[in-house]
Length: 136
Image (cartoon, rainbow, N blue to C red; front, side, top):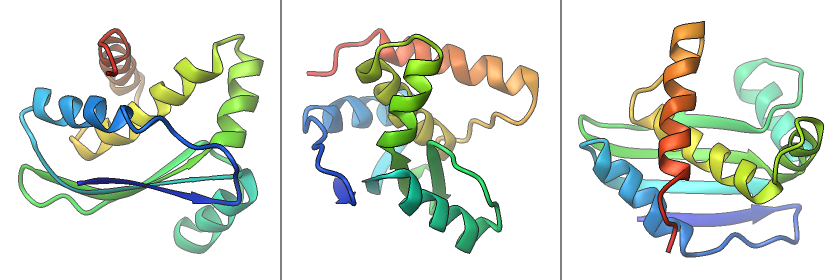
């Protein structure tokens, strides 16, 4: 089951994205467990970053992995404010960048990393592939 929660923001996320997210999980050969997306502002996510990861900087996403075997579960915190700022900085469409970040969190739970240059290339290719699929 995929749940959307909201903290300190007024924007709601299209519920159709839940099917798209589940399709990513299935396409990766995994099973859907319990996924909680918490959409928030920069300050909310900064506090999570400070309290749980001892990082003192803004980010667009933090993923907490609760995966068991092939069952994908976890909590994914997403700063919509940071995505808007980043989309503007890199001259990308906000809606597409939001979907990219949403997919990015799921791909982390599916086992993809992004620490090395090679891992980043693989992650970006996966994001691009899933962005090309319909979300309805």
